[in-house]
Figure 1: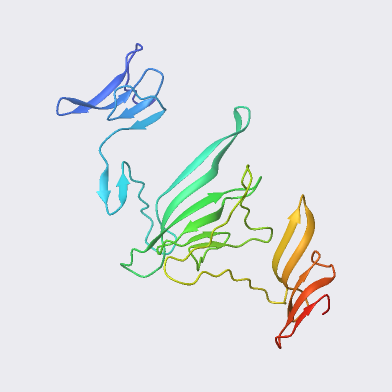
Figure 2: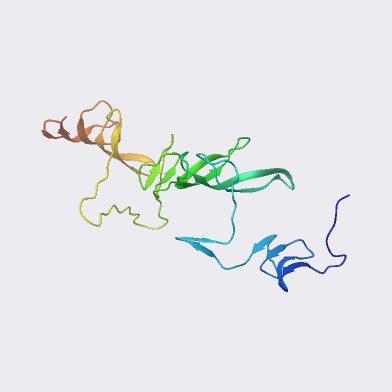
Length: 231
């Protein structure tokens, strides 16, 4: 048998130093550090430790030998079937060393989730430069989204949804990239294609047409010729 330290009544167990309570365990099991009446199973109260912009109340330190990907993490879990089928990794948050160079402390933040029956995989990363990657481990832009399905939606639940592209100095561009002449803007109403504008597959000219496969209404060729109602 092991050693049991506790109370025989509904009184809390209190551990302290320097004549002051430091850790409190209530009769229901809630644990508080720096708080006498912890509301949650685990509460930590105390002044933040400040380092740069970071404000910290706790530390999870990875003692694995340093290399790319090492660093402390937090796992978030729960049950999958009533009070059974425990899963310890519904979601994970980890701060990692971003490289294998000795003494280089550049870091990244990883956010992971899991599919049913699978191990967690990283879904979002914030790298040391501040770039955010969703679906990519190497974001090259402030926001870099990579997906085999539709990548982003902006939806407003009232009238007049708006996406603003603004430069604080000069020049604001929307860039469309495709390896096979199929890129541009598609306009739909209630899921029905209305107009398409841009470079379409196999067509070396910019067009406006009725949907992606409809007839061309306006065309600009690579040579600069403009056609209305003709290609």
